[in-house]
Length: 438
Image: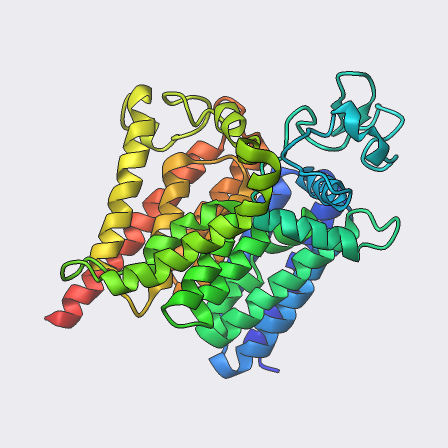
């Protein structure tokens, strides 16, 4: 084994040790920053390792690092408890959009895991009628779309008695490894390392078992294993019906359709299957619950201050340059402009590049406080190789750890630095392209 390979391996071992500490102990900003520093060091040192010798380390390291997320219960998010509850409710023949967990009608479905008898432990939510639960926002119905609900029901069916969160975590690990395998075939070892070794994968996809991982898998399969057409549109539609945010990948799938008029055949070939999959997945829930299928989405947007003029820590980068009241409208307009540019000038042979630009721009413009939202950006970065976009994922992790709603959050300077890194990366590539043409 070469010295360079040994050094990279040692760095990954150190990263694994830090990740184990992160999932086993109280989350702390210092541990997050250390993990990301080791990740960056491993990627940088890997530049000296030949591609043919790097592949095994990328795959083995990715599998092993993702598995560190299985070492402890969910540590920094309570979302998986809602997943387990939604699966249980559906198994009882009830739509998860009809009743919040606190509804007395669902008392028969409660157990001591999700509804502990004592309320002294941290991360518990008080119930209006007394008692407490691990499920966040217990007085609100679910927010998760229908494909995610199907996944929750499947996990419930596959979960042995008393397995609690573990099957959800194993599901996240399996999907992370499947993405790793798809990227290894499509992007090569050096780019795949962006996904395989990224701290967001074991922490958010596996330990916290976020359903975003299902959407990421569907997007990666859409871009890496199928050609443009109905299959790609159907997979992207399923991704949207799993976590809404992958709608930002659709402009990427339509890269270049406006280059010479409107390529209607391509547009319809992607959009129609995507819309059909979304509509068909919602249909049984609409028949059962009617308009209630929107769930807690409006309440979430209000809670996170997306609906107000520059509220909370949203639109943080834009608010550095304009009045707060302008920021929400500017964010929407700029995101629309980016999508149009992708559909006009995007590379149809590299649709993931346009998807990365739109998905990453959304996070930079809206500056969410949840780190798992960036899992899609990490995967698309691995497909395209523009490593500067990983700063967006780091910014989301800092924002979440420091407090999504905390005034003066460290997320703002990190998001601003991430935006600057993206602009510098674009300028450098543009300059190189000009030099090649000359």
